[in-house]
Length: 119
Image (cartoon, rainbow, N blue to C red; front, side, top):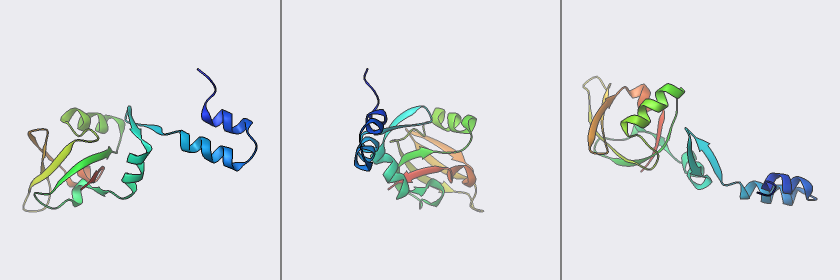
C-alpha cells in the first residue's frame, strides 16, 4: 500500500495538491460504518427525526449521542440509509412512535433529535 493521498499532497508543491488530496479522502467513519463524503454533505441539509411530521418517511443519515446510546439505536435498526416513518405522537408530544424495518419503536423526542434524517 502506497502513501496516503494526504502524504502525497504534503510532498507536492502548493495548496492545489493538498486540496486535491483532501478531495480524494472520501471515506469517514461514523459509528464504525464507512460513509461517503456525499452523505456528510447531506447531513448539513438534514433535519432531526424529532422534527419529522406525522406519517412522513425519511432515511436515516447519522445517529449521534454517546457511544452506548448510538449502539442501542443501531441495534434497534436506526442504521444509516434505513427508511423510518413517524407513526404516532403521544398527547403531550413525547415519546414518538417510529416505524423502522417493520417494527414500531417508541423513543423520547430528545433521543429522536440526535438522529439526523433526510426526506
